[in-house]
Length: 139
Image (tube, helix red, strand yellow):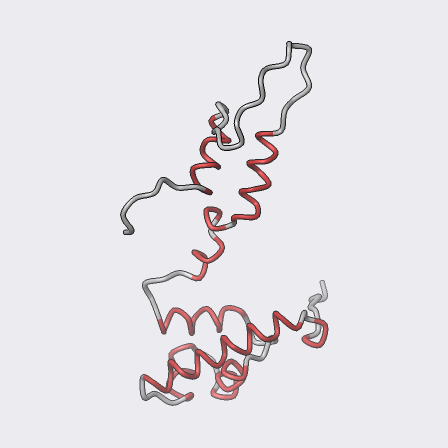
């Protein structure tokens, strides 16, 4: 099956800029560590020209190569944490709205809850807790 990819010229400009900035940050981190592109390329298992393309922010370089660079820079943090379900506030808001949406029933109408009330539905309560964690001391 042929591989279908979007040519870099068709990527949204914001995406191209983010990849370029990522490449610049990778280059800065490597230089601050006093290492060459060739040294990092060996650590990543890529060629030195590919390492140069990463630092230029070439969107055609494999995502795994960028992720490996991020891992070399900060092994304690995971890239996946950036888009963890608990961080996807737009989707959480949609789910909360969907759960809070009143259902049509033949039962008599109940008084409307206040805008800040947490619904009795356990799913809605869990989503609301993710979106609005209790205030407390910062970890």
